[in-house]
Amino acid sequence: MNEIVGIIILVLLIAGFSLLSGGGRSASELRMRRRWESTFESEIRNVRPTDATGVLMCRRCGASGSERAGRCPSCRAVL
Image 1 (cartoon, rainbow, N blue to C red):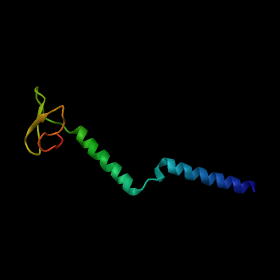
Image 2 (cartoon, rainbow, N blue to C red; image 1 turned 120 degrees about the horizontal axis):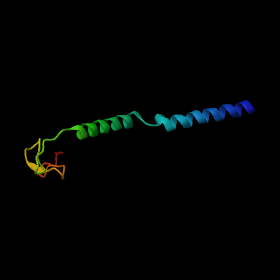
Image 3 (tube, rainbow, N blue to C red; image 1 turned 180 degrees about the vertical axis):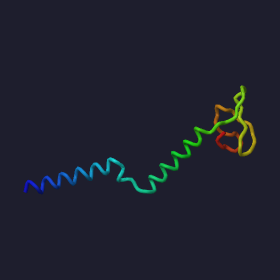
Image 4 (cartoon, rainbow, N blue to C red; image 1 turned 120 degrees about the vertical axis):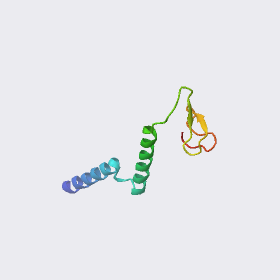
């Protein structure tokens, strides 16, 4: 009887650890997380040409927008 209780506790501990370590996430959640992280990394590492005025040129439509705003005023693309 004591051995059965020990085995059940061991199985529950292993199941709990696997859920805490990410075993409960689905493959689509992991892919979505990786895609978001790669997009975020590429955006923060992107070198943007700027000048002393703080105005950037949009790469999509060519309009000028404020560096502080971060988005193009006409097409809403990331500057």
